[in-house]
Length: 394
Image (cartoon, rainbow, N blue to C red; front, side):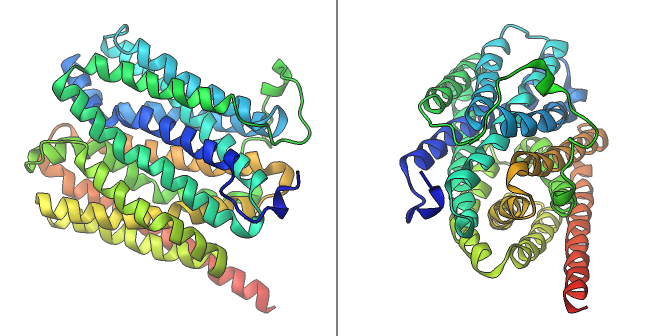
């Protein structure tokens, strides 16, 4: 079938893909608001910054492998591996109930996001016409974001009314359903290789797709703020009187959902860079807003602005990564974007945890630092746009 001739992007394949991603997203996001308190109960309060940093470390390390495997053995097997890791880890958290065991599982759990989103984005590019990539990325991101919104709220409620172990098992259930859907999907890679250990050998030129370097730098700087927020928001929410530590994530994700589809369509029509510039301006405003207005109202209104920013940013940056790559390097290009994403989140989480040290008065200053990283992303993109215009006008 020639997918480029399809009139509607909302096919059965695309719908199954979005449903699988929703379940996958909810699976690991429902754990986030409860993990800091859980680690403290194990005696590892000083390691809170590692909860996200370790997760993103292995996610980033696995990206070159997932990108290559996506382009060599197929999209579906790589997506399945990502969901399988979530399924297994959910059952192991109650078993390895020590600080070292927990941190080890965070490392392993990171492989899930290192594999599934990479192959998913390549799958979308395979089945959707190029002139609608932004729209498709936006709709898929909407489904993924619904999982992000529902997950933390469900996670906090399960822990409140049942137990943290019940939360881990339900996380595994969501991952299992995600796997079941994937195995009913058709493979889209036209020329496939059989898996062999040789495929796992990564040369120095196979880690990063140089075509996607602009995407790499913008993504890296912009996601430092997200790593900062997911590390500090649970403690910050509680300190200003918000009982449900997942509320912030739910609000910002709902705001993100509201603009994703429209942002993708706008990026298809007017270009990726103008949409990215607007989103980065909003990111800077949201972080400064939350740092300056230190109340529950300030945090939640800031989360709305942050949600609008990320909902605008995500489909545009994903489509731009595919735009800049050759067809046979889509997986590698998307992996490059995700390497930057994980590195940004990991750096933000690590430094936030390092400077925080359970001193609440430091949080606003850490937010300002994250805002400075967003400003770097904006400056880089504006400079890239200026250089591109100079090249065109020569």
